[in-house]
Image (tube, rainbow, N blue to C red; front, side, top):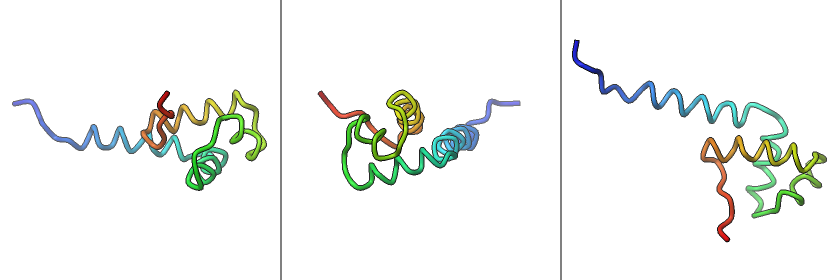
Length: 73
């Protein structure tokens, strides 16, 4: 059988990454704060009532899903 060039598996895999990134209340809250404007990790942690380390881990999930970008230096 010839190899399949079906794009669905890749699409479904990316959708699963996005679903994991928004599948937690704190991560949704962080997205809400970021939708209001660019903020530092420290500021996000403070307004969300999270530790900086926890906030950073949540943001890494968002970044892996392509939902946020790190600011350019």
